[in-house]
Length: 266
Image 1 (cartoon, rainbow, N blue to C red):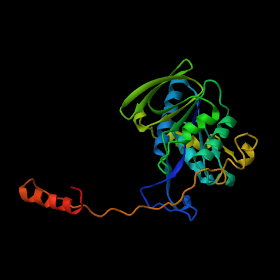
Image 2: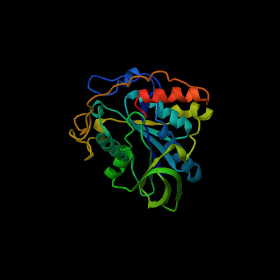
Image 3: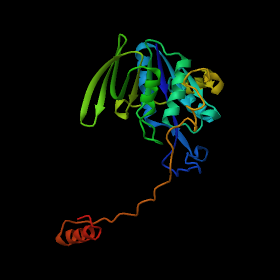
Image 4: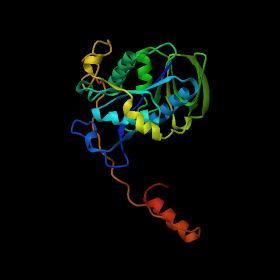
């Protein structure tokens, strides 16, 4: 049994976000972090490993420096990493990205009792599309927004969060589950894990490694294979400093009402 976790290295949006002229993010100029929801997916896989002894494989698509992120996840407890990297993959939207990651998962080997974990969404795009699209490309069942996961006897039972409550869904493996932050609290890297993370393998899948897969074609990957295009990307202007009114007297209420009337709020 394997738990395959798709993770993404994303820009640290607490700082300034730089954009290239073609509308893509200038990732080289920004600090990067592990996508927060993906860490919950990693923790779900590691929890499964604690219970069953399964192998945990973390996979990401990105530039060569993304190997450092995979090493961090190995230090948390993952068994090995796979870095999908190649110029041919650059500029991929969610459709093209899911094509490439699905091909990589097939290359890793998706067996009957395996589970693919993904984060709910990435903070740089917020689409929540890649995980479900991977499941479609692999032709396996998917359950999104998992707030609780139980695995027993080849069945996966998930408590799925909705806008107004929860629903419980059961499916057979192999399947794909996307995880939300309410699912768990990601563990820290261990001292032993940090010392041993470079002794474990990180395989690199480039275009030549995956090109024989039917999903990998020139018109389905990269910028050329991306059906969605960014018309304009920009950093929104910062809001001005707010005005604080203290007190509950008549004069304060009159001042507040006048300010709201001036802005046509009331």
